[in-house]
Picture 1 (cartoon, rainbow, N blue to C red):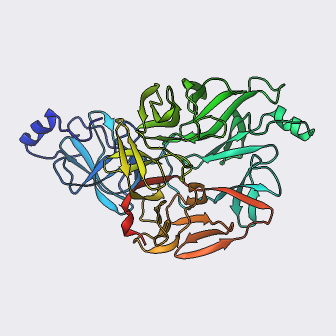
Picture 2 (picture 1 turned 90 degrees about the vertical axis):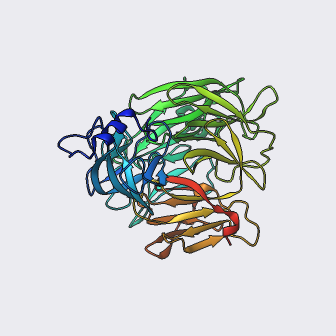
Picture 3 (picture 1 turned 45 degrees about the vertical axis):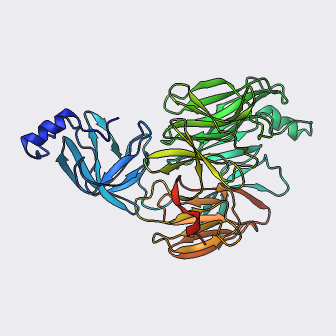
Length: 476
């Protein structure tokens, strides 16, 4: 998509000498869809961020960029220049001019319509994934915080792997098939966690349905094992890995499209991963550049990242050089991080360095702090400064306010699932090793009561976006 180059028609327009009115059109620019005083976001297209400039012109200075999916407030415009409609926008602490589109292609879109994040007048309730009493890790349920306490949204059976959509309207999860639940109820020996269906809960109406079931329900020890569904950045699809159980020689990468309500297999010969307890690749992330899956590829089973085009198939396999992974990933899997003008897949390579795998297949070392913030907030809000490998004299993570002031810090690096940001970015929740659950909002912290038999596993609230932060020396 054109976001950085000037076509010949731009030069001809400049020689003609001036901006045209909205009524007269703006060269071959598509008709404006944003609205003054409204909200928008960067459209999902080619994985490239959108430049923000200090004036409404392609020759103006670039003051920053916004990754795909970034929400913003519309402050001024439209202004026609260079055959482009420009809008002055604000996204958190970045304010400048953004191009709406060119030659029939939109770079941004209004916050309305199917598959687009809706602006919210107030944040939705916090969600908690937890098990009760002495129940198994594989028997999790979803709860919603209400004025009267924690309301159970799911019940019965064995569930896990809950993942909230970027739109905040649905939660996908793994659920044991009926045969396994029935066998467990009859105290028959079953292999819990060996076979899973994929289901979705609609938070708007409370309906639940199974998206991918077992081929048959008569043999609880046989079937299809599925792992950890992840959402596409625009919330229109999910992906997961699966394999026949008992294990065969290869796994599959599967995508479910909510628009067409259909399944398709992107790869039916996915290599195993030695770090996984069952060998099924479970460390993967879906970002603008595509779906990245962490595997151990033959013939030497070296660590590798396989990058897939969601609409096609395997793009490339990137061997993670000779760095041994040697530890579980502290962020509960690889994450796509905005670094300059591109997204980089970041993962732990050993106890002291990060590895960044770029969409072009190059591999780079990382020694930077990561910064997490709400993906949909348009006003400056709370942030997480994360330094996983901090020494004892530096904080492993810090909760920062919109000015960068430290609100909370800790030298213990928890997993990503222990944090959640409200969609507005103005509130955050986290729980610590002693199971203390805290919400920080309006400059104040509140400790929430948890029933004694409720054991938390994850917090869900709004979508997070990660970016490259300051050098680690700036912490502490």
